[in-house]
Length: 125
Image (cartoon, rainbow, N blue to C red; front, side, top):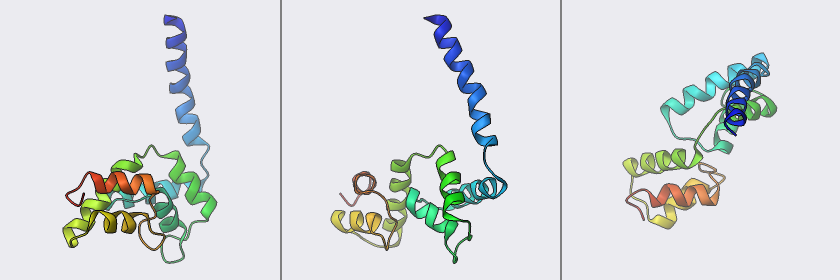
C-alpha cells in the first residue's frame, strides 16, 4: 500500500508539468491574463472565460480561454465570496438580490450554487 501511494504521488508530480506543457502559446498567454484578472477581482468560470474571449476583453478564442481557465486550480466558491464582498462594499443587497447578481448572465455568471455560497458568507444573508 505504501508503494502504491509513493507511485501515485510520483505520477502526479510527473503529470502536472506535462499538462501545463500541453498548452499552446495563446493558451499560456491566456493563463497569464486570467491570473492577472484574478489578482484584481473575483470571477466565475464563465465570467473569466467571457472576459478572456470577449472582443471587449482580451480577444482570445473561446477554446483557448476555456483551456487556460480549466488548467488553473481555482476555488469558484471562494471567488463567489470575493465577488459578493466586492458588491457589498459598493452598495447594499438583499440576500436574494445578491444571489441574483452573482448568478445572472448579465452579472457575474456564477452557478446558482456558487452564488448562494458567496452570498451566505457575507452580511447579506
